[in-house]
Length: 325
Image 1 (cartoon, rainbow, N blue to C red):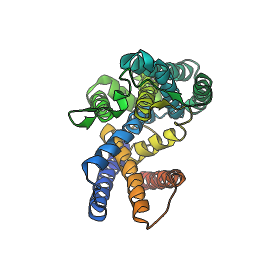
Image 2 (image 1 turned 90 degrees about the horizontal axis):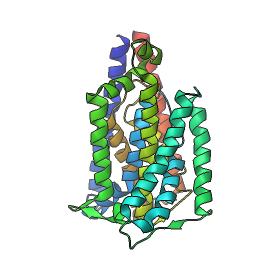
Image 3 (image 1 turned 30 degrees about the vertical axis):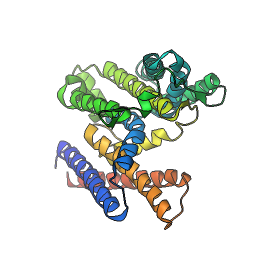
């Protein structure tokens, strides 16, 4: 088995595995809980998880290049605070302000990684701390209320054609992301960088420029998620993004994207987001039935264990594939 065949095998396993798991979870919830597939629950899950979907989309591109972005959670928190502060001026200024805050963090990551040649892990760890500090300073270490008169909250709480506006935003982002990854030279370069960055450079591909744009996009999507966070909950929350980067990484990896880079799928990442979101939704239903009693903190425990399990399976499959080469 060639290396390319090995990668395709792992990608196929991840893609269809997460889809099968998602379908099985939906069927389980439908059979076990009343109103699980009711309009209110379905739309609530989509509205809430749209924020995580946006962050995971940016993380998908970053991980495909073989990198990592630990700053997305803090960037989302910063975006929510900046958007809340700008919300009295209207929905569009609030949106642009939060998006701009995310793009600034993404630009910092891009410059440090591509120009100063500092590892993405170290770079994004530093910007994570910086973004978190900026969010707390701007918010005065407290939640920042948004303006309800300007129409800003419609970005998070409103519907369009009976469907949550945040979900529409996430769908548009994923459609664009899928087109970019699969049908453009930019997407092919992203995959090539993750497969072998040195070889990509020798082929004349603009590796640094593409990596910079990937981190810029990741920051922008995180800032956009922060805008939805502020609009949905009515306040900019400087500490809300804690752990979001782990959710994004878990969703991306569950979707079959290799942490080593070179292989990934936008659609499977979305399936990973929905899978993790439904797991926590089912836990809430179980709490309601009284069979179990798990606090929200257990979500982090389950998320960590789930990520560890998937990474362990990926590693095992990679070892077996290499042994057959």
